[in-house]
Image (cartoon, rainbow, N blue to C red; front, side, top):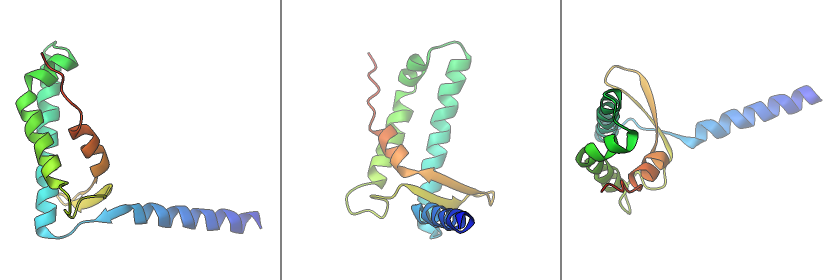
Length: 119
């Protein structure tokens, strides 16, 4: 009995986690996700390089404010009212290298909504 409850629970959890992730395969949509991902990687690289040179996280965010603002605007534009992306959280697509990538659009929206608070 306990075994069937455990198996039922595992099947339910597996199905619910699959349903939470939206597979994206359309070329235009994949291109848009790749661009957002590339911008995020660029901002991360810039901030980490700055921090490696001894500056604080806050200083590095402010130093790269233009790139961060560009990323934030791209995320906000992607999530405009009525867009395909509005309301989605986890999306999965294949990278240029053929690797599956999962992005949390909800996380990107939260991040893009944070003010920099630079002097």
